[in-house]
Amino acid sequence: MVPKNIDDIIRKQLNKTLQETNLSIGKLYRGKVRDNYTLDDKRIIIATDRLSAFDRVITTIPFKGSMLNQVSSFWFEKTKNIVNNHLIEVPDPNISVVHQCETIPVEIIIRAYLTGTAWRNYKNGKPTSGIMPPKGMKKNQKLDEVLVTPSTKEESGHDIYLPKKKIIEENMVEKEIYEQMEEAALKLFKFGQEYCKKNGLILVDTKYEFGLKDGELMVIDEIHTQDSSRFWITDSYEERFNKGQEPEILDKEIFRGWLMDTYPEIFPNIKKDQEIPPIADHIKIELAKRYMRSYERITGLEFKAEVSDINERIRKNLKKANYL
Image (cartoon, rainbow, N blue to C red; front, side, top):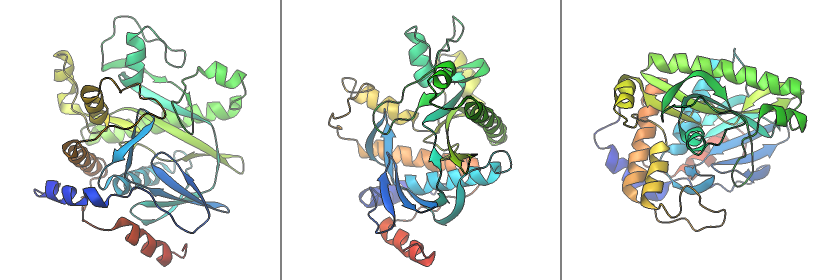
């Protein structure tokens, strides 16, 4: 349970967030929110506290990296018998040591409700990955069948939604591999939906990334985290939907909404080199608390938030695990 003094703890950690790491191990690749160190056949992934929205790193959120890494490893453990994944060990709350895979440059997004990008496209009469839901639908409405909306995985800038046919025709992914990815994603999503339902959550939509190791398909990156997924509260969804209200949310969509409300001239269409405007402390604190609540609701475990120097702890635990 989130403690009563959590606002104070988060506020004290605001100046101690993990912005980035600079370790003398392997080859460094810095993603939007993760620092990756490649060591031959392994990769050390460090989940920082960076927060990405609208394909830009916007700010850092206290404890975000450790919560997301632990939620992801929780799901990897739960689903390893459904689909193979890249996780080897978790030597620190912010670290996953994984198999080095050949990344497939297409991610699979599964949607059970019409919201987010799919809703914005629908409202403008534009299909998502070549798919146009039926006429007359409302925002946040449950879809009759889940949608599979693949997109490219861009190193920077906006990912591009493409129809399955185009992905295969242009040989971005071999047909057999793509179909394995889609089948795996649907199985994982179904499991995630059922598991979340037991805990009073709706898994609204999510994305999956895949890689190949010795020709074998593996789920990589993260799975069913608050960064890669939308979660709504089950109990209040129907009533709020019928009233035309937004669902109760446990993901970072509140942050996207705050950005668009506070800086409508910048978001959602922020440019690649545009300066990031100031981000208020109160929204960072609120988002950290939401990440904590969803962490605890998903895993059933208490998240222990402690003010600390994360870089120092990471170095200590990597030495202990013989990686440094």
